[in-house]
Length: 366
Ligand code: SF4
Image: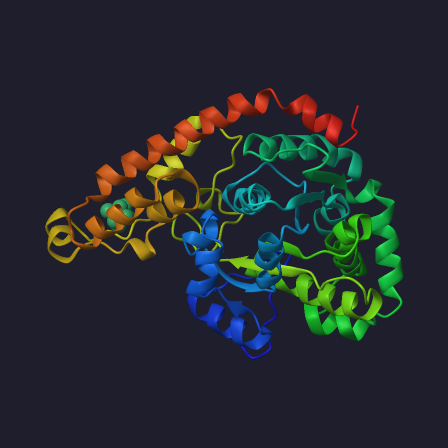
């Protein structure tokens, strides 16, 4: 990472292993300690150490202990179908909702215009598809437990954006994001509105925003503007997960490299082919694998299972151990992963089919 490196929340930066330690230090992100992990052990992403850092997560477990209200907030840019990256954040929301938080999920259609040039009306079908995905992943949409909105239709979000903008200068935004179009600057201020919205609607309460580390600039901006504009509100907290690299071994999942990821909507044959082509941490041949053991920490098969497709923690731990001891072979393990991914996708699609109308209603789209 170079001295003037800025994390790009709109996707141009690949974060390397070494960068995580530096970002944690540079931006004052707290690490997840064993004490916190134990307190939040129900959360699969914390338990499996996929979430490595946080801001103010302590306020959440204190609220849980005291039976006080708290919120979990995140969103999706409706620029394409769900994939492994968007599913990570969506599942984190579902996990936190199960722990008692009210879930707030914003459809970032203003951002999909500013970043990708997709008009709001054209983003509607994708938004419906995305919301049906998160419902199929287990989000409970009942009004007491969730609130879902579109940025372009939520006047409170826009009001917050206008209110906080009074204290924002171009220099501030340049320092956080580098030189960008005003559209992207505005969409970052709209995101401030999204993140503060739970407390504006329901009153002051701890809020946690599960994100990949690349979204931290939005959190820093939001906390700063909350501090200066909304003195009675809690500073929104965050959890940070490791970003999944490309499954083919490339630095990151990217649209221009279709083998680096798959979407939940693409043909099963294509998904199968991509998972079969994914990078393992295996050795050059069976003999070496047995002698030296594999490297699951570098293996995208292992990571896919850990993030999404293996329900059983004990099996994951056992497979890790067997791999490093040279007792698990990549061919067999990859085939197991292919079957789990395909089963997951087939079941997911069946559930989702029945949820499209529900998603449409939630988004108030005819
Ligand atoms: S045995 Fe499994 S976990 Fe180990 S490197 Fe091969 S595919 Fe990855």
